[in-house]
Length: 200
Image 1 (cartoon, one colour):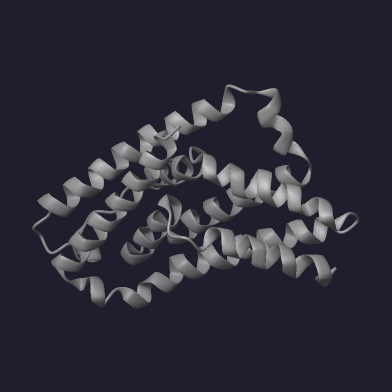
Image 2 (cartoon, rainbow, N blue to C red; image 1 turned 120 degrees about the vertical axis):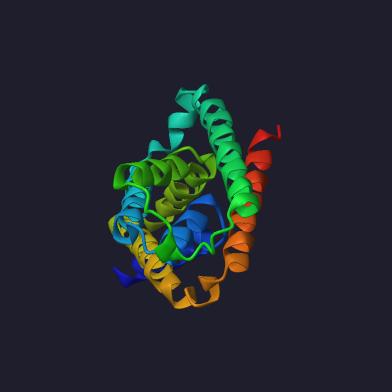
């Protein structure tokens, strides 16, 4: 089992380590200590569902549904552009110190809706989990379940470490300037991913 579990774990971990829209959102929630458990769980469970689908062979669905890829691509780009604009506006307009305790927390429903949109409207998530991990799992015939469990475990470890570990950075983000920089960086990440999605 370990001969398939650990390859799945480290491959999945390497795919989600890059700073992306989802990771930036989890980091932000962790810094604010707002609905951190729910956000981490939503991200990890979403990955688990997609990994299971990929290992089960649903990576071929894009061939049967040619309209799926452009819908996801343009829908995801639009959402990311809107989120980037909100981040830039926050970086420019907030003047109240932006300490986590000074801001009113967003509702759980709105927070999870944003989290799930950042996850499920990003075509790269499908490429990494359903297509890539799904295709590589074919090398572990008879051990696919162990491979999938390893990949899923990596998602849980990463997101919960990022979300709850972010509190260690809270002293840095006690200043208004640090929050502005974070908002600007989040906006740039969202904008860069959106532009990448819109390229032919």
